[in-house]
Length: 278
Ligand code: PAF
Image (tube, rainbow, N blue to C red):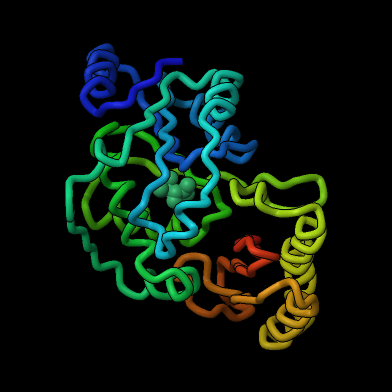
């Protein structure tokens, strides 16, 4: 695997490949890689000649400086994992390589920025768009891959690509779960064994809502889901919503694409998860 830290060296390599008509796929990550990330790389390898994985813990998407500080950084293990799945290129820039001092960014994506995750993490999605725009501009991939676990993030990035008219095909890849149902996440390594046990309630509740979708009203489902999750005092419930999968506005039983999304703090770790209901 080739490893680049600067835009210039990465672009020189990619330009040569592009001149040979090679198709480039990008998997943007913040590192602390797990099987969810490697599934994205594997998916990318099916349709691209060169797969670039970026590892960059992006400061502008953290609204809480403590969260940024404690975000796991495991570069050596990440490189080993990327080599195992035959990733072609790792782009691992410094903050200075990506950002100039006091850089400004704002893109109006309407309500999508402020609902669900946006409500609990103000400014988060502007930071995500800012860095993904930069990564797209540097790598100029034909395809880019994101995990379904960050369902709202995928919609935000799709909207950004539409508004900025970037010609990049985005692919959303299924959530990879532990055998007990917990959605894989870089943040899971902060969970104690006890927290991990508790966290399983998130995927269990999502599954329960899916199974009972046509048996109860959506209000009743939401009420029950909230009760199930907040019944343990070590879990701080943030939201559980059943929404239209395209707009993230509240769904009803007739909505064509429905997704249930949840966020909660388990111990000291904030987790999100979701399930496609239909
Ligand atoms: O999903 C993530 O890991 C990050 O939000 C992303 C897309 C790499 C941007 O920093």
